[in-house]
Image (cartoon, rainbow, N blue to C red; front, side, top):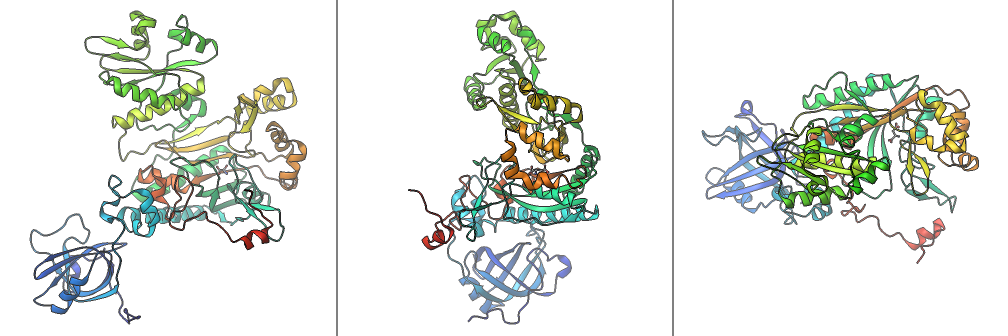
Length: 603
Ligand code: ASP
């Protein structure tokens, strides 16, 4: 029978019934999550997106329904007609919102059957009892798990909040094209071949950066968009090739205005989980964040700040340290409270971990109850070790971990170690939310190998007024080029619990400065005109000062839901090797399609 449903309509979801519906005749529809046969009684956990309701079918009173229930297997889709009863004393289930009641079914309709699932839903989430690849192949099944249901619904609520907020602040939602010309933000573009203009390509937006700036030139004043962005990068655990941002731009804005907007936006979003964020977020410059936490997105839920030990070792004749200091490097450490008893094995693991961030080695001092030991004891001697421990403010029972090297390496290695140790030792409190605005990012990143400078944020970010002279000098005077490394930008990030939830900048709004910046980035005038000519021209027609930010939807959810698995927050994510296992993409296309596009695949 095709039309199993007929005129039957459900009266409640599986999460709605409470004591006050007792006595009502109801119709529920959902999936069989669990079935238990107890002779004359069969119990069914009926599940939909809203929850689970216990169904009881009795052979004595409802012989036909009971016989139907016998046929049910996991994930069958059924309609249940029955009456709501209070559960008997002692069988209430506090874990279920509907746990005080049950439905005594008088009729069961099988709306559809289901094959045996390739993995058990109940166990799918725990300790990887089903491999993630298998779950991604059957994403529609994995998505039935309550945790993923909750995540995806939370995502919808978060995006709704974002829209509500932006709309209330008088921002206008403007859609920008997905088929675009490349607007580089430092990643590789995804390109789309044009059929009509064979041999030419569109690029998918890495973000709508240039277009949102152009909406400012077009006088829209306050723009936002829930924008899909595409970046063809080698994936990391917290990255996906496509992701979503709340993209924002406003005219006549200075940093303070953007900060206020970010603070109230996140204040509004976090009310979703009944968390009151501070009205004003603490602030830290990029330089300070790196110095104190070894990271531009410090997690402030715990301390363990980096301590500089360079001065204590200034006169050392231990060659590796001496050469680091001579080459303008540093020697820094972190103190792990009460962990002087770490085994050799753990220390070896931590050393391996630090090496992944470029550290040559990880030195340690253990301030044990009876003796102090250290990997540096032989080379530095007892007195120096004691001096170092004191400089680090370490006390009896503590462990000091030390890294020496280039400033960037020391920061990266100790910053990562700080987090790693905090995770191992469970030092990060749950349900605590620590927002932070990180300001004054550097304008450029230096690539030592090619001695070139790339935009640290993107090429449209404005230098700080204080550094404008230096910026000009560095570009105009070849011999001063290295000064680019010191120029700070009007760029900022919002960070919550170590997650960079949003980032943005005040933009360059003068053509001349924009052209200079392209030059700093090594783009010839010709190249700049070819790629950005339309934008340079647009800047000449009355461009207001402007700035904005983009807030990552997935990143924001990671902070809200306290998870670090980005795939759990996207309905149909890609794997770490950028594949969709359910649809099996990327896939082949017909030879005829390639022909139309004028494309030949090289062997
Ligand atoms: N377009 C930038 C990004 O995607 C955000 C911004 O500067 O507004 O990171």
